[in-house]
Image (cartoon, rainbow, N blue to C red; front, side, top):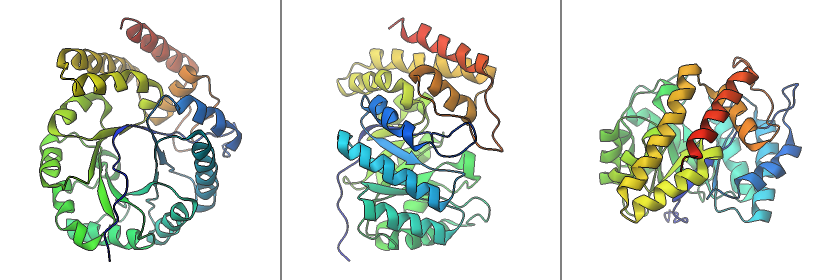
Length: 300
């Protein structure tokens, strides 16, 4: 099979939240203003978790239609599920609606014991949409799968001709650096720990994917621009500001539910609550973090 050569994913990519009604149903009407807000970003990484195949398809179709209309840079769709068949179905759907790529996380209930087993799972998902650029999504803190990404990448292009890169959401910069060293030039190495992006850029990251880039995107774009120009002191200053914001949030208790509510506070979007087992964030907590964010960024 001829290898797929897609447009290389670079720059800053916002990992989106799923808009929900107060009753926990998907809120498709909120996606248009969400897209408008994200026009300041370079791309969108669609991460649908805790939903189901039917709702994921509806969300993806709505996102993609609006983003094509607004000419956003790139739409990379996460299609990983606990079920291989569900992952394959979402991969086929992403191909049908014309997404720019698909990404797959490791299963985390029945976990792969070896890098070989994980590659086999990824291969089966990729085969359902063989023309789609394919990315492995490494996030051990969530999956509990602590296999080294460098081991997963070994020979992966032979099994998955459409393989285009890695979203690395781990704190092990040595493992990440080894992935960069191993990767051919047409792969994208995207980093996913927002508070230490600058270190990953120094290791050779091509870009970044993160949920905080929904509301910190403009600042982090300046960080990346400063790094590209060799202005390390400016890039470091912005990275420290991001760290200060996240340290403040972590001290108050920061999880996905808080992050989503913070996005609502900063953007004015009605993104709604999380779904159980995540608990809604108390409004005063999100407001306090939003105020601290505005205070720190106002010092730029």
